[in-house]
Image (cartoon, helix red, strand yellow):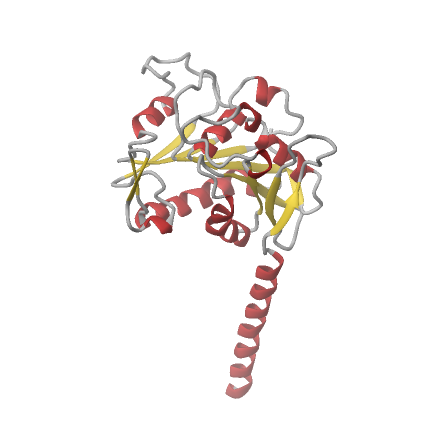
Length: 277
């Protein structure tokens, strides 16, 4: 009897391993082109991960001003897909011949990229189009917030995001309220996208700290990670470096807290199968 119980336990463990391996295989990144050159002179490319069991909620991932979309997918794509989310990591630069926009700022042409990605996902059979969020990093986080700020970009979009997350975004320049739940995570010591600017945004104040009209928009959840700098989620920066006069440094504690906060936020906003109002 004990031998049978032991065999059953081993079989169950092997079944779990096989299931996990199958799920991992199905969630490998697949290169996609989601705007045809017939429709636009600048088709967009990305990496798509589709876990089994769909239609599933999905997230669009937007990289920062220095590119690195493949590295972004490597950092966050496997984790998000293991949680059951389809991921589409967007390459905003290659088809436009851009190397970096850190000095010049985000080109106007890239400001609709999040919705181009959303339009692709909304038509994909593995995706539930009513449960898609956008997650951005640095300049990509600014674009993510811009996508859900009440205004022309959001208003004219056919499909709508249900939530947005910004990792260390530039928080200046937002004049209107947000239309969906927002999570912002920034380092306490960030000298590129200062936490105080995001605190103003989250507390309903403008760039000069003046209160906006209260009672409008959706509340913004802000997490300021103690002792953390810009790019705190990037393990390649375990050895700190300076870039354009700014301090970049990986912080394991901040990353761990971010993973926990992100998982809870996505669960609360897009994991449910009930359609968002």
